[in-house]
Image (cartoon, rainbow, N blue to C red; front, side, top):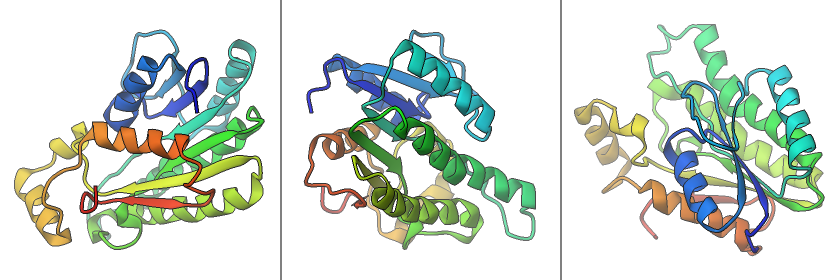
Length: 228
């Protein structure tokens, strides 16, 4: 895919993988739309949208249709976690994680696909969906497992759009680097990860998925640093 003049929509684009991907994509002359919620970004083609709220999403896509007319690629990077013990975790806390990570991803896919004749959707999963899960983040892990299933069922429904998911383990994002160092060290040892993945490498893997049709619709691409 030639990114020149392609319209790329990225959620969670104020920091982390989303921000890194946006900056790289712009170097390829793509028209990149960045979505943020909490961290304000005063730049062109950045828009605030709370993806927990369907009304916000509907308004976002009305604007996108009017200004950009189409979407070629959607990358769902927005994510939320709130680690605590299950006996301290309230229903609201659990649902907040699911609503951002899983329901928000579904809604973005639903509305974006209506503006895509053809194209690619990449959803951000995690190895926590399958085998690196931690009981402190059971809501986050459940949301990522849901994203992988959602990706597969969207691939069945959206015949003209290639829908894939990327499942990395720990990445050197701002939220990971803010973790208590001893906890992070113990987690890396527990799952056998020697070093953090780089945001830039994850962003480039997303671009590879977008470009390379060998990643068939419904694929979940694991990225744990062992084979890269």
